[in-house]
Length: 201
Image 1: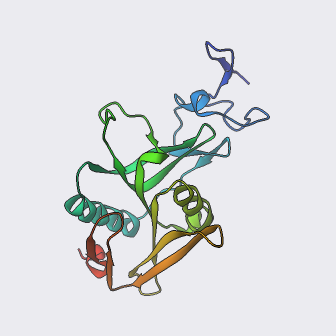
Image 2 (image 1 turned 90 degrees about the vertical axis):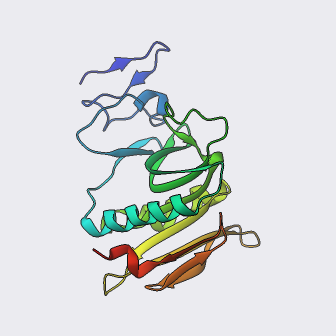
């Protein structure tokens, strides 16, 4: 197995060794140049494969992106599938990220610092249930961002779960649910979205 050594002496991840991280896991500077034949993110120092998405997922994500772009207030920016740096061993990607772009060079930006994120949106897939339901809400909300999880009900209609931090209990909980109707909130800015319209062709 080949290993690449960085100028600082740390092993760098390669297509040959990425499945065998160091004892304390990969840090982002060790994997930032890693090119694989699939999309991935860094979770607890390990490379986590991101699954292929279907038409329903991409349609809902793209329509939500347009709705948020139209509703955003300056200096906020909206991006699809952008990497967010939680810490050196956790760099995750979310379907949609709304962030404060002040002082950031968005044209060369590699990762968005999590403290700049005001909203992360995940459109769920079967293979990302644990991450979307448990891991990512905690990561984003603990950092002060809002989090939406958009699922698919039995009739293939979008259902939205909006999360917030529960200060008394010390963890994040859903504070609003919308099933196939209208998503309306003032956080992080006023927006109203007809969920049924997201899957109209």
